[in-house]
Length: 133
Length: 133
DNA sequence: TTACATAGTGTTATATTATAACAATTCTAA
DNA sequence: TTAGAATTGTTATAATATAACACTATGTAA
Image (cartoon, rainbow over all chains, first blue to last red; front, top):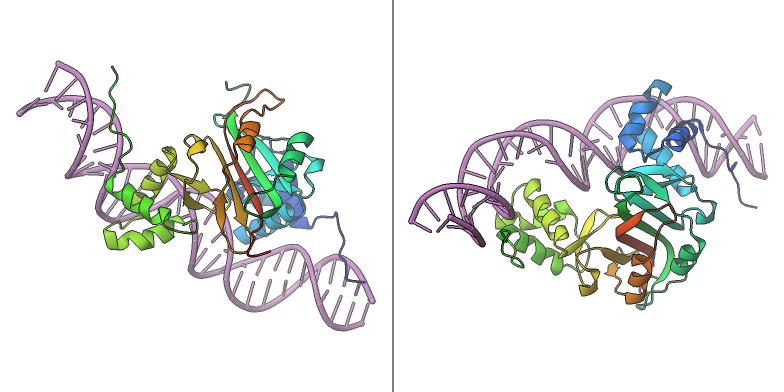
């Protein structure tokens, strides 16, 4: 049997950073996170980026590529980030994770004509949210 | 009548940078572009980024957000970058713009339950291309 | 043809985002 | 209890992107 490590438990830095992202109403950038956790003893960028990388890998957070920012996963259906979709308000910067089984199924089964088999997708919609439009 | 400027013609720097991207088989990063156009008198990052911004705005190129890199538009249907989709090989870095009217229609008409009206989307699929799988 | 607005250029400096490299420590499974 | 894996702490630096300012070129309207 191959060695297994404890799952579902986050390390100290990972927990600190996840908590911060999870309670933020908006996506957080790495250096904003750094600034906010310095009081907890996390002093340098690599500490933040390492935690972010791990949290992304295990699906606890997602990176919003168009903003270089991170949000907590709100969607139990996204299967460790294999299928992510977001709506992004171009005015107030609000980001909302889309949980739509039909959309997810449609895209997961989409096959490129040129013979590529997809493992993962990320979709970002842009517009104006209810409040801003 | 409102003032109109010439359309469809690129400025000198825009043309140089578009030509470079257009003949590249792979997405190009801003500083790779800078390095390659220095012999043509483009010396500093802002010159590159300004041309890239404009080329993106008029739909001649697209930014691959997950790679911070740029490709020429191969899809006359994308309507000035309102609806972009790419397949990205995780092994060889190849990027291919997807032109699929059905997919585009499906996503363009997708409406978020929470009342957001979308103006634009970007979709990035990841996997292994024919050659790499 | 002038004059005006808009777009583009060149330049220096700096801001922002992300990683390399290395030493030390802690956790986990056997 | 011990070896491997994961995590931490740290310094330095790489990579990506923009601010700000002076200047030039181009298209349009009068």
